[in-house]
Image (tube, rainbow, N blue to C red; front, top):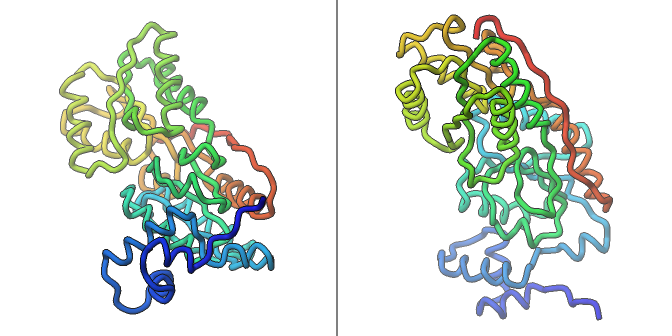
Length: 327
C-alpha cells in the first residue's frame, strides 16, 4: 500500500498548533515565539514533511532554483567555485540561493531547512559538517563537491591522492630531506585525507618519516599561525612543507621569514588548489591545481541528471602541478 502524503493538517496535529500557525512558520510571516517555531520544525522533521512537494511531483513543476551551501566565499578556492557554479547554473536557466555556513552545523541546518521549504529543485553542497539528518532523509537531488555529507550523495572530487603524490614528489625531487605536511584533523571525513595518505606512502617509500600537523579549515587565522610557528619550533631541520591548501601555504611562507628561513634556498613549499586569485597574489607558489571550473560544470551536470531522475555516480577529475617562481 502506498504511503499517504503528509499534509499540513498532519504537521499541525503533531505540533499541537493550528494549521494557520504552521503556514506562518513555513512562510516566515507574523510574530511567532521560538518555542512555537521549534515545535513546528520538529514536527516537520519527524513526519519528513516538505511543503507542496507532492503537488510539484504530480504536475512536474519546477522552481528553477538551486541552493548552494558552502563554508565561505572568503577563500580563493570556494570563491571561484561558487562563482563558476552560479555561472553554469545561470547558463542552464537556474537561479541560485546561496548560504555560507562558516562550517557551523546549526547554521547549515538552518540554511538547509530554508532551502527545502522554498522548494529548490536541488542542492550543491561543499560544507564540512556531517551527521545532519536532513541530508539523509530528503529525496531532494543533491550533489557534493570535495566533501562527504551522506552515502546517498554523489561527490565531485579532484584526484586528491595523485595530487598528494605530485606535491610530495616535487619536494623530493628538489632534494628535501625533512618534509612536513599540513592537513585537516583526521576525524573530519573529507577527500583531503587522500592527499595526506599519498604524502605518507611516498615518504615511507623513500625512507623518510611522515609528520602531519593538523590545521582545521575553521580555525581562526591566529590559531593557524600558532600551529605553523610550532612546526618551525619543533622541527628546525624542516626543508620542505606540503600544505593542504594555498591559504596555509601563504601563511607558511610569511611565517618562515620570522624564523629567518629563505625561500626557496633552505625551505621549499608546495600548496594545493591553484585558484585564480591565489595565482595572482602568490605567483611564486608551486601548487597542485584543481580543475575548479570543470568541477563546477561537472557538479551542475550531475545535479541536472539527478533532477531528471537519473542515477549518478561520484566522479574524480585530474589535477596538475603548477610551477611557481621561487617557492
